[in-house]
Length: 385
Image 1 (cartoon, rainbow, N blue to C red):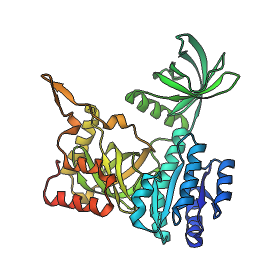
Image 2 (image 1 turned 120 degrees about the vertical axis):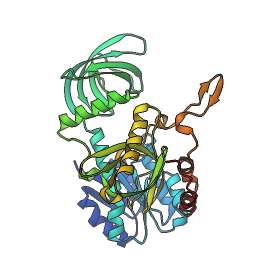
Image 3 (image 1 turned 45 degrees about the vertical axis):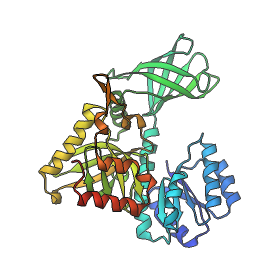
Image 4 (image 1 turned 45 degrees about the horizontal axis):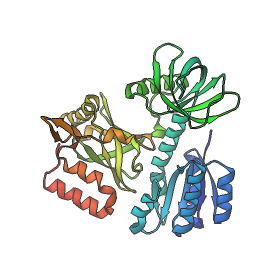
């Protein structure tokens, strides 16, 4: 299935460059310079990505708002073409995920679109459904049990068939075993869509982390795809700052804020992975990533990353970053205070960490101010590593 992007721009030069580069990344593009025609097309066709020229911010914002309305409040992956760097922070705050600076060159466009293509491919694979035939048990809102047949399965939901139709938006518990019996999946779901014949699309709400990982591995094996492919990875990144709470990565193709990413530090002999959420992105320059630290397993991942850095010369290390989801689960990065002797004390993930604090409020700073503070921390040797 080819990915499809809607390009809204009157800039012939930028449109010509994008028209050459996007198809090479597996993304077909439809270009419109007229606002009304672009919005009409948006109502006719579902697009995986929007590329909007913010030379005139008002029509670009209107297309973005229309896309949100058509996608239940969530716009497609959105790339903003921006000529003035001073408005970048506003453009990102208004909902754009990526920024390409104008005037556009082939080199800058190819680099900036690398992360866009990686994220789109990952989102497509997450939504890919594997046909499955297995019994599923539902516990409905009125506590009644309902038996159903699982028709297909993805990382984010399932298609089931029940004797009676379900109500859109309804919440229920579900339980099923994978066909090979290797895993029982038990969680809450919500009806995303429903047909009168009892066929129902269910969105998963609270899969356990370990169950989610096992389900993902099973689906990848069933679909014949193991791990992130080259088209889902941004290689040759540079880790410049690191603490127990987060890191800063220099790359000409950063991922959007709130995205869940996987950092892979590799040597010839081994590879260490750790997940993180992008807290701040600087188009064409880099991104700040916060590490989750709610569980011992998550903290161990960060420890393994630091130990590998300490034990290997920099010339032997290669860092790549791959997307995991457009939006991370914020609950994995927020910590409630712990109580000891009837006193509240900071949770383990909230101990003093200047780099982490900078990452968390980095989206409120202009890029130059953020980088200056990052350099100040380095010179003061205040990063808690």
